[in-house]
Length: 240
Image (cartoon, rainbow, N blue to C red; front, top):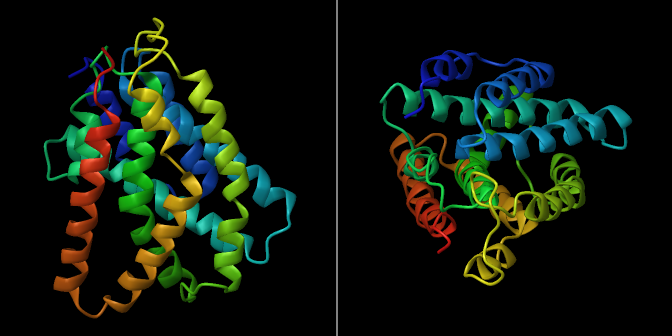
């Protein structure tokens, strides 16, 4: 779709092992993508989020900062993996394809691309990332537990970044202004990162119990993908 996609593929195929690795890959993707690539604006927002999480972890105040750092890495791997799969024409979750296949649609606003990516990443990927993190750290996803409290402790930071992005990215893909009134206002108003993350945690608890049933685990992930794909396509409806 874009002349630099092969370079983008090589970058996405890297496997991060630390938050610093994650940031380097996101910064590389940002440097590769042009302003006319919808992927750039999701990556831009995700980079802001990751930098904010890194800062919060370094500042202390969490009971299990190592768990949050591991979640950050496991989470980012799913984004990079989905991007690499799509660029190499391999099976890719439909919620991610909704974004990747529309990267050049100039009638779509930058914030729409950003939120479509956040939708795919939180509603589809985050439950799986939480499970992978718990496996790697020998913990269990439980409401009210140490890890859950640290996890929800980030919500105010993330909500603030999303609200700021709604203003900064409220232009069409190429930067030209949007109409004063459109369906986009209602679409953006309906989005809550805190609500999405709470749902993701609940789904992680379900997935945790399905680990010994691979077929059911995959079926549940397929269901999540279906629902998240519908939401993603709604988020990407062009603004007239």
